[in-house]
Length: 376
Image 1 (cartoon, one colour):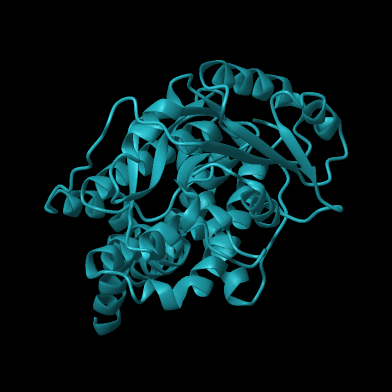
Image 2: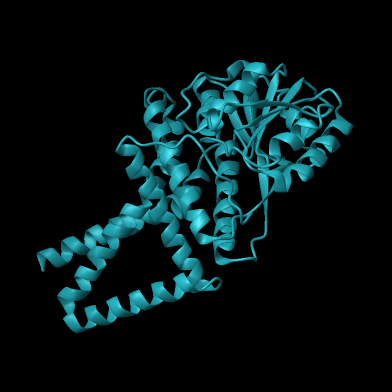
């Protein structure tokens, strides 16, 4: 009976930690006071828009069209790009438009962090706007963004990302739901003070706050958290909008999550001394939205083992039945492209991939280069 109770308690704690970042943490943020930002319409500062690219020839034309639209509204914005040794026509297509963009090229694969540091070093704008090659900004995004920099307390602004293609597969549907939750959490964190890190698709900082860092870290997390460490505010706003297509293939999304979580936890280890210096409220937010979530796969595994143990202690026959049904459900979800069961399997795979990346980082591994998902 004692073992039965212990397994039940452990399983309950694992379930609580598993759902905490997604359901309980948002509710707790409701009790935090609102910290408003002074917004000034028509405010303008010099801007440098930067992005890195590798084998993105399929989206380069659309990217250039988007830049041309932005520059038609604001001819003085500076646009810089880094090509990380593309083997397709990406560099040639970008370099063919010197009227729109200045392109730099590394020697082979250098990685995004290297490229972003190089671009930041050449930038002249007071505000650096970071995005990706496959992300497209709404026409009014830049003027809306700068309105928030009229408040001297603001050091960084995260935009709102709208995803395209959520109906194409369960991978895309779960990805869309996950990012909608992320957008909501950032909104609530911003309302109460600081966002705990930006997504590289669309965010900005004052150039004076850009930090120095090694090429092995996740640059968007490192750069955006530098705003918080500086004592300025990192906020999220709803009217700075960008668009991106979702990954639709499971294997690509799995590899992507492993890569990102490997670099993210490696970055966490690198930033630990500065994280310890944050205000108590920011420490709480960081642990809630970042740290607990990284170990979701571990909570899932331990909780599942304890649950199976409880069932087996109650009845061996029932245990085998549950194991069979569980295995059949996972198999059905794995071979299905859409549906609720497939979506549930996608969530499990995402948790496992994230924890696998954490394990890689703890073992001393990281990953500096990336390959764009072909299913976007």
